[in-house]
Image 1: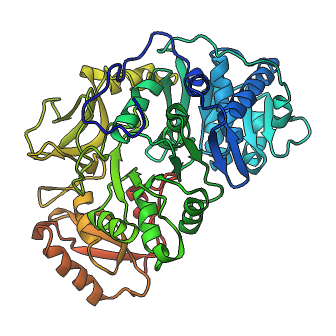
Image 2 (image 1 turned 90 degrees about the vertical axis):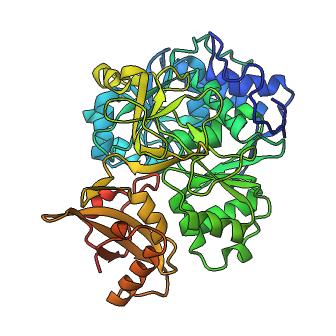
Image 3 (image 1 turned 180 degrees about the vertical axis):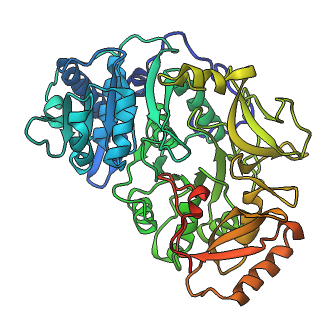
Length: 531
């Protein structure tokens, strides 16, 4: 599809996956064949790397890894922050037909040890800034060799030493589109970490969805604030921009509002991907839109949790660009999303793109009626769906039964065909016998000027089953008081039914969050910072 093309209809070949496909060939060789060799592929705080130079370094890295004995189909751990080293390591392994195993680079030694025991990688690629936890658990794990960038210690292999080979281009391994390409481990916030296996076909199936939802422009600079060990950031910040022939901007350091804003300004970022929590944190910075030049942004994108209507409207008012919400899971990445070709309905995640089959099911796996809440499910036949959970065939079979993959999220669809996520199935609860969606109440809470962030949880009650409890982080300049709690309730009654108004309002200094910024409601009962 050509740049700048906006369409509500798919193009010929849309999401058509060839039998033989290698992700590295698709994102490295095709841009060169299209004459983009000298165009910047990645930009970061110390410079840029062109498509041609990136291909050269990936080829060199692949040869170096092959000398270390890396084999096709072998799982190899990557524990790195977003960087050119990460990009080279990931693509070099893909080029060889090996299987990168991606984990959050900030996991503790105990968390990392659990994943190593399950994945059993023989080689681990890391960065000096993230290597300590790996070094602590290496002797008790399957890892025989550590390859470290930015400062290898005795007994380790310097990542830089793999890149000195300047031979001719290396051709990517001939792999089937259905062969495993990479594994992403979940953070384990809802249980034991899962190894989610994706095939090479993922790049076409999801890459085409990305192009359809948000057609690329030739001068685009794309940035995500999340780590590439999370599939949304891996696709939107690294692989999709490369496949589209545009530039990916690397956020260096922590995803603080100031760092994000400075990086947008420095690299003239045009498309931003982040989570709702980060947008709320940016909006909490006084007059940020006057202190940073954000005119390069043509749009922003939000995922990970519901984007509240107040956040949407305030971002548009202060920044001036559209903010599109999209929904996905680690097992597919992008399911439904808004974009320039479709009107935005605040609070909704939009409508499915062509070729995406979804349903809202009841407990009997029957579709619910319009406006009824049920379990959000994706067709098990979708080519972008994961192959399975690594080494867990029974868990995989349970997740893919009846021709559907149940996401675990509750959702409903309105009369116009727009979908709304009501929250995780295990987050929703009943009060007085009535189903309560935390997301709906949180959306209303955010309308109060004193509320910076909020989460809604149940409080067991012998009379009504559960009280509705709102856990609130106050905006700067506001102090907790019974009067403020009453003011918040009064505002809520203007927007939601009386039976949905929280009986309890607790003020806290902060909300516990997962590594990708999702609020961990299950942890709120343990919160020690109650005021």
